[in-house]
Image 1: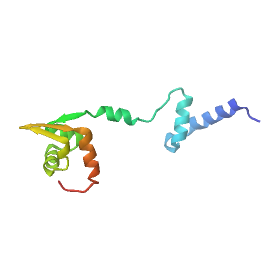
Image 2: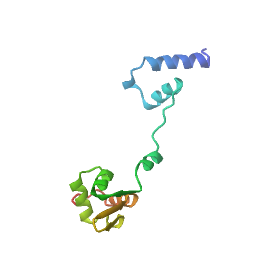
Image 3: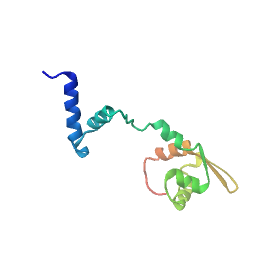
Image 4: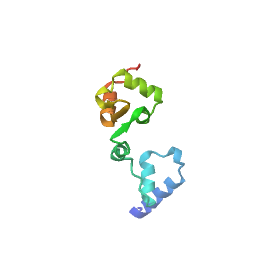
Length: 112
C-alpha cells in the first residue's frame, strides 16, 4: 500500500506530465499550490477600486463605458443617465456608480 507522501508525489508527477491544455481548473490550482505559488482569483473589490468615483466630460464618459466619444455623446443625449450627470455650462460631471447602475437597469435595449 502506498503512503500518503508517495501518492502525492505520484499525483504531482502525473500532473507535471499532463499538458496544460488538458488540465481542469482544479488540477491546475492543485499543481500551482504544490509548487508554492498560489494563484488567487481576481477580486471584485479591486475592480471597483479601479473605477473612479466621478469622471469629467464626454471623454471620461467614453472611457467609463468603453466606447467612442460620439457614442458617449449619444448616450448622454438619450437621457438614460441623466440622474448621474451634473452639468454647469460646458462642464460635465458624471457619478460613475450611478451611471453604471442606470445603464444596467436599461437591460441591453439598443439605440441611443
